[in-house]
Image (cartoon, rainbow, N blue to C red):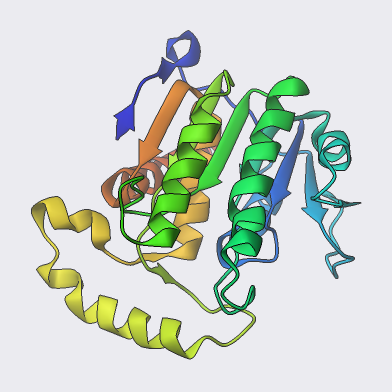
Length: 252
């Protein structure tokens, strides 16, 4: 874990009691964030910020239609949320290779959401980036992810968590042949990725979502960056707590 922060008040803080916002709720990681938050007893309300109506139905869910190109629309939708999960992203295919359109989604929405989180007194901002994010990368995608991270970190939000997964495993709503081939290849390579290469291991999208929720509960002050091993440790910690709670409930 790369971090500039510490646990607020020196202990785990549960930050999900109020309304939390999810941006990118129809994506691979975002959809798992929503599903897992539904199961969180401490989480009272989940506000989904979406471009168009979605077919979600659950007592905890609140749907907010947002014009993401209008900052005030985004800010209004985030107002009242102490935690913001941002798992938004697009692909070259969706924007037909237009890097400006790509930037409008991956950079503008994320950075504006962080700004809105700060200006509406949100305390916890969590975002999905990518392993290898580097402002000096020759790859547009990795340079852009680095720019997003750097811009978000400039906001003095109390707790910022950045997740850098490698290849995401899981089934998307839309079929991506190249991604399916890549997933198969990364699974075969997994045993060979050791030491400093472990961060490139493929990871289940649901695991990334679970790690993000656990990080929100911990509420570490400052900015913390999570790679593969750090995300896995968060998941283990979350599972241990659930098991302890279950034993307590049955009186063991």
